[in-house]
Length: 426
Image 1 (cartoon, rainbow, N blue to C red):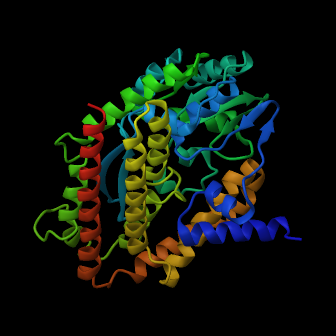
Image 2: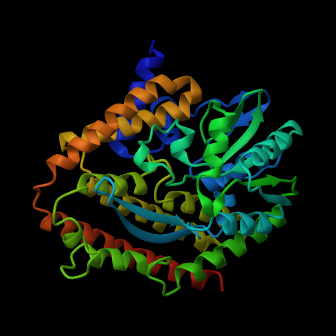
């Protein structure tokens, strides 16, 4: 009989090898997981923090709705690229935006809930104590809340102090006790955070300080879901047909050019001329594009599932054909991630293993896996530092050229696919 420890090791190994999410890797290893709950709260999992949080609340209210349809109601996929350079520790990090309006949490929440016909209240309480009291009152009244805390201050992702204030994704606060709050972050077990720590995490990032969304009950019948799907598809096509090279598909074209440009100050040959922070940047590409990362990856497979559901709701078989194309595009993103952080490089293989170990621990065990995740976190950041040192003298020309070609191919593929989508939903 396979022990729990052996099972966890097999799931983690698959996650590290394939870049898959915990749920997908576990399904491949042992089949579909049973549903877990905590004092009446049902854990339904999920792939992307924003769409998973809304879905979890609605399902626990008794609604019949899937995460792919919630994701589609919000406009589906997006595009965005930013290369950050941090002077305090000489690190470099790549932020990839894969959700529609990925940079605007409140706007995305508002339009998604509006299209679904879900009534909601949005609260922004300036003071830390008053924000905590407001959350406590909502939970005591039996109203779970979608909140947006800073991941470093939450603690369970085991991030270093250098990432203090870098933000995070939405989670659901669903109950509390005298000194702590219980969170659902797409896993299968409760995550208990001491109230003082959660209060600090919610107040850390100024642009969404203490934001709280309290969802009312909605009547999500087939007509409502079909309307939300249609609006989301039109939004997606319009958004990704825009000319912006920061928040639409031309962002991929810009990134492809910056990977090989030798003159632009933000071009990779310029930024990484000193070799510093290269491993961290490559890891952020892998972690951003693959579902094993904290934010759910490139989301093209989730969008494909959305298109399959919309094809039935809207009686438009062409959307199902387009779903197949987006699964192929998901594979292109996977190949890019593999090229950025190949598993046959021992230092990278170790980083992948430790990243998967933390994700698996959070998803499977919640707070109960804290000690194990903490140990993996310490090793991960040691391994990242060592990899940055070892790559400092690497000849990057061939690496950057290969990545540029892959990003360019993704740009062409997604541009053509979105043009097909726009033609289908006129």
